Length: 511
Image (cartoon, rainbow, N blue to C red; front, side, top):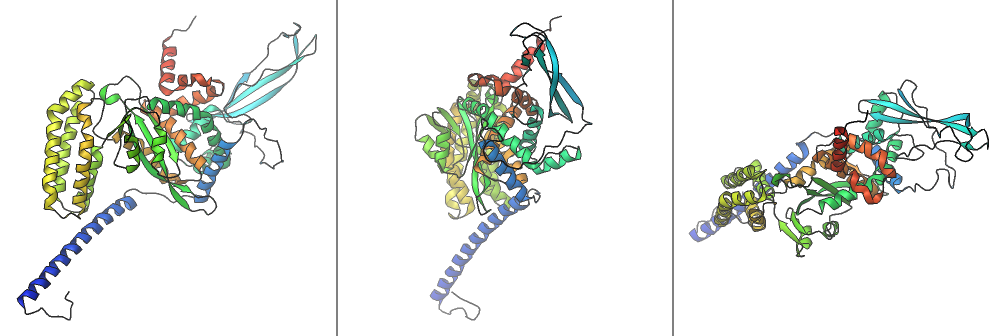
């Protein structure tokens, strides 16, 4: 190869050889520059695409650790059992908060002898609750009565509470959960907000509530998971989330998986739902475990970890058109490429057909796709096959074309089945809440914290999919679930709750 100190050879053969080497070097360098520009564009979008704030990482780590400890606590063990620990004294609730007083009386007549009760005193229990926009104190007054005949002492029991020996009401617990996992406010920040209202609630207290609440609601999240896996087709995806490694304070990459059932595009009769799962890594055995026993179609990207699912006859794959399109969009954003622009234009034609198919019955969707989408898909595949030999095989564009050609055949089932979609966007949308939360709390501090997050996301996002206020639903559910029979847990699902509420509202009250 020539350098700055060498002259061009005079021999024509040597000159041609040197020129060929220079051309080859120029092509290699141009390809490398193209790859680096593509990578740089992606990194810039990742780094500067959205503003993120620096948070108190120690506080965040403590939050997740405390949540896990709360989830693992045995509710049957009294707080004072075993070694005596010094605990912070519980401060009284502010006197200026409004009080809702409830008197719980055992009655006037002794059940044992029939004598009348006389008062001995009373016990007063206060719990802090939250009604959207304001705090209130629920005050339970329980008179202690004694029988005038047999001297039996009687007192009405306290109503069941979500957290025994605690003082949060169901509305406050729901507010903390929705604020953290629905509105993406870390607990230390919520603590500061409460402080401005004169409420002293330490971050560790809130973490304890989150851990115990999600443990109480886990059976409900499992019921949502069973509903999702009963669908003819589901949408699957995963996203990375940082997990703090125990001991050294460093983080490793864990995963949040999502599985979505949404039949609204083809007017299916069952309500939509989303089920999240947390794992410490991205091994392919996880989706296999999550979908054990499932029979139907799975919309997913080209992640190899899903391949084990498709080796079983029970589960069939549907590829994602959006992922194919995204490869070409990345190229257009990083460099000029008429071929990539043309591919995007052709894919837009397929989406125009899907816009017409949305909201139609499955048979009508199939008829429409056969008439309009199939010719477009065939033409796209043939055109990509023609373009591939014309460009460098090592270019990013060639990689995008090869990816598209490898996935188009697995996309074709959507043409023949009206209950399938052209892409996996249902799962992509379900991951937005995780992505927003990830920018605020940065990482989960433990495996238990990750599991608590998956449960909370399942409940909150499923409620939102059904147009139900998660705050209202969780408030009522937390007030009832402790006494609710586990074999009737489906009665507490958000759509069942909404139906019962609507029926009760329409029933005329007796005079």
